[in-house]
Each structure stands twice: as C-alpha cells, then as structure tokens.
Image 1 (tube, rainbow, N blue to C red):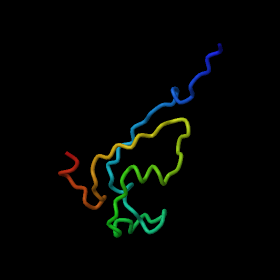
Image 2 (cartoon, one colour):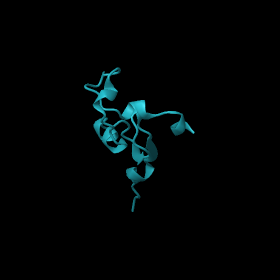
Image 3 (cartoon, one colour):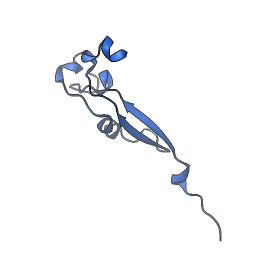
Length: 80
C-alpha cells in the first residue's frame, strides 16, 4: 500500500493579530487614504481577511482579534 501525503498536514499556520487602527478602518473606497476615519466603522480582523480573498493559498491565516480602536483613537496610553 502506497502512503499518500496529506497536503493539509503540510500547510503552515500564521496568526494575524487584529490591532485595528488604520488598516481596519472602513473607507469610502479602497484608495480612501485621507478621510477613511470619517466612517467610524472598524472592520474586525476576520472580516478583513475574508475580503482580501486568498492571500496565501498554501498557508492557513488564523485571525486573532486583539482590540477595536480606530487610528484616530489610538494614543500614548495604548502604546504602553
């Protein structure tokens, strides 16, 4: 009997930590680099990874939510 390798067993897993900020803010369109904070909508890391499609087909991306802050809400107290 020939043993067939299990492709799923060889997939690397990478944790993607959702720290929010600029990356998570919902802009009017994908190139809204200036007024993106005006919406007040912060996308959870699960939703962001889902909308980006399959970034790395041979890697399991594991979303880890950490906090929910918009980039304009982050200050020194959050850095420490």
